[in-house]
Image (cartoon, rainbow, N blue to C red):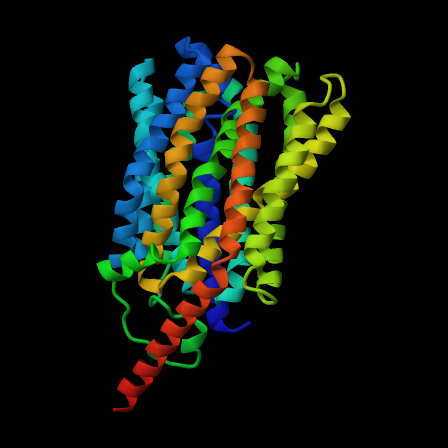
Length: 431
């Protein structure tokens, strides 16, 4: 392995660790729903406000972070985001009443807007045909982080208290901020585009508002943004309500929850890599490949989640099998959507484009826990999970079908733009 390849995989390892620990901290609130609700004496709807507060903050800040990432060094901004993560988590562990807890948990959303810079920096380390697989590797951290959070919530928190768990995860955020600051090198934007292969210098591609506006001229992006809004509803409902659903509506004790969900989450983690690898493989054969894989993921996830939720309460084996199959397909979209955004946008505005996509996503995500809480209080958590997931994934499938009509033209347009830049740079260097 060459020195350059070793360096880029070291960066992937650092970012994987950052995402793993950050996701553990972020998603820990779901498995801790029981003890937190009991301590504050709150309803499902009130708990939904705790989740939605952080989502609202991160939604507002996505465009700002995206702009900063496209203007300044992404590696240093990511170090700052990690520092903010650690600090705000500590604040949420200190407060002792419900309203301040809602406010301090909302402040943890500041750093949740950090991923567009991370993904765009990785795009400058890896060629387009390899990106979905790399993003799939990085996104393994999300379900594994959820699993680590589940273990901490069910096995560690009862011993040391849920506040001390937050002290631990916050401290890890501070350590990672130092690691990223000194361990991750900034890369020139556009470095890995195929048109610049073999060139020692590629020039500087700087953010401009005209380039940012061009993002919205890509019709593929219209459908990516629409699916982003719908696609986060199931994830947020499942993430923050599923553990309580198993305990209260399917009568699982803590050990049953752990031994049921741990393997399902590991399968879910594998789905990110499988979906990313399939997306790269099919992308080499057709530019529609990543959209096709994403479409398969939402349809299969919808079918098997429905089968699992509707399984009789006593049929635990049947429930587990259907949930495991759903878990494999559910993450197929995630790495492929990130790559699709970068397949059609210029390097100097990729963080901004991704931030806009996440802004739209969080607009849906911010309301999902509250809607789910209202439905759960009015009827059941089963109805909240099932109805929201089916409607959202059906909409995503329709939006993916729309994207397939435009993806070829939008990719061809970007490749022509990159070829023109490479030609101009060669002429400049020859002069």
